[in-house]
Length: 497
Image 1 (cartoon, one colour):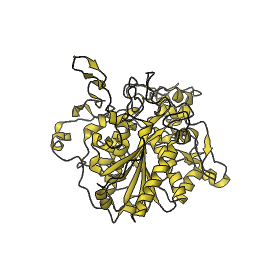
Image 2: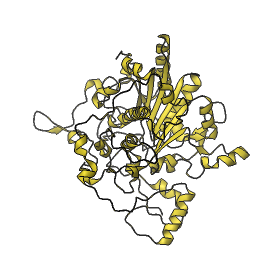
Image 3: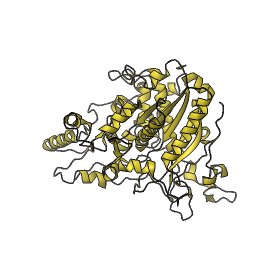
Image 4: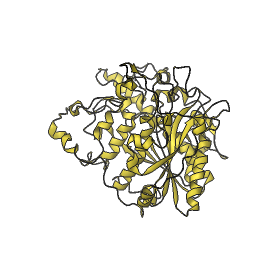
């Protein structure tokens, strides 16, 4: 039985259920143990390596060389008084190329600096869906966003990007997916069926001039742990559209589920997104502006981003639609990939080669069988990735530990650190990377100890408790403006910025 341990990526104190992983190896007589310090026989190593190749895991062990870290190696103090962002460049003449107009040819290796900045920008939007999410199971608002649309970016320090949030997205599912649906333990709670799943925003006037168009952004949250894809996300493929395209049943359920008996999902996540995107596109088209749609998400959120792209591109032929995903799994079959390509959707997948999630679903039956499908045309149930790939290597950063860390490999902050430091496949981690290294350890333990950055440091002060006027530690009441309410979930006006 496999002993690979998978931890819930975005709940640091929660250990994910690994039964799904164990089932995959249930019929294997050989034990596979990825713990870096346990000795195994050479025969076991060979068997593990063979199985790894069979399943296309290619799990790599850290380099065995001795690594010595000194203050001279890092010089972190030199970075403390420098900006965390590179200067903003005017990309108005090059925006189509940067947004995948030419499939990112000659922009990924080496990574074009303007493209790097845009990838990080959208990645920080995706990170906001975790930072603002209420994971506290003892909160009556567990599963909601802690801030309303007007305060979200201000509270998270993202106003620097020049976008405005216009609408929150809520989702539910008709199948049991416990790793994404957070529920309060309390009887009196804001919602029994739905979770906040992301938001829609739009670039302000100044940012729109810099990037050469009005950019609508759809941002999806993702909390599914790697083990859950084995258990819940390999059941079946469901048809989408009118052709041969099919997508994973669980992803489609989250995207399309609704119920009149719920408070927040009388309309599905799909319907919420389409209604707001239509409103924004029509509003800015009427003003004679050029409009693009960028959809982003991490993990499960990357899967929902592709479903959104498919639906929007079908409704708005000619609209520039592109997806930038991080650590996302496969979503659909070969026909789904081909239809997205035919509709002109541009997709850039950012993946870390040590991360297991992008290898799922379809761990065995995936795009590697493309040649067989070309001959037979019968593999409509084979999962395949979509679009261009920016592949990162965790071991390229001298700031990250040389350990096997399933949690850390998959964290979005790890991805953003690697993007910021990536120059090319043959060069070292760039020394002039600007993004704050401490962010890597927000919800994991990936940074080398010599940096002296506490692991899992991102949390509410006193874990959300406040001392009242009587000296009692109590849970504070949420600001009335931030309490979710179906009656107040109306469109936010579009402001000029």
